[in-house]
Image 1 (tube, rainbow, N blue to C red):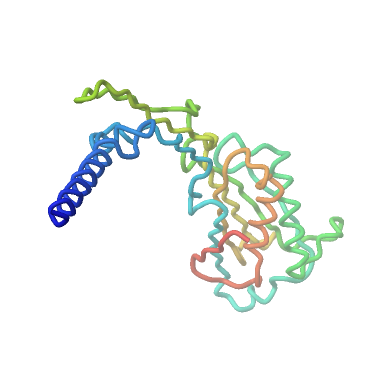
Image 2 (cartoon, rainbow, N blue to C red; image 1 turned 180 degrees about the vertical axis):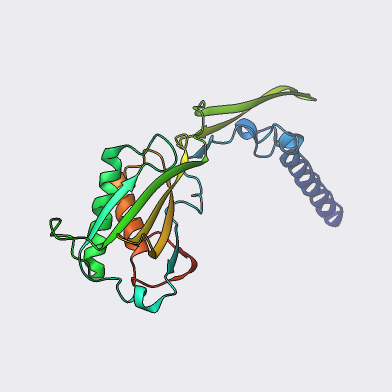
Length: 244
């Protein structure tokens, strides 16, 4: 008799465990602590916290300088580089953006670089056997992004055995639209004043975001002039210099 009672109790406990397991499967964690059965149906997890994006990857071209320099094949002419007085002048280059005031910024940066290369730029009244001619130009590599709504989302409605559910997915983009990516190019050519013979020439380019406080005209000019006259009068093939 006791064995029968024990078997009945064990069977009852097993039934209770089975019911509990079934209920857990139906009413497990989900929307509002329930509706777990709908989690795989498309809207059960749409009530998660909004997805917030406040950063984005940087364009690999930003702040990158490319340089190319050439020197005269005439040893006697090349030997005259980096010594004596020299003058600096610039022309407008390509595009109306290169105003006289902006050109003066690049001229000043080149003067500093020439002094570092061994030239005399402090005596403009002395005859200038060499002239450094500059051309500054700019082109848009990628246009600026348009303004957009910082909040976007999608909505869905589903009907199931236990009623109708409404789901909403929200995406919050806190990043600002990017301004245009612009390439600035500085060409420099050192020539003999009397003969017009080219002794040395080179160019350097850099890509920056328009209006970026980090890249003022003065900073861009200094960066490009420094890259051009690094190890002057070295000549080389096109080389890339990372942001630094």
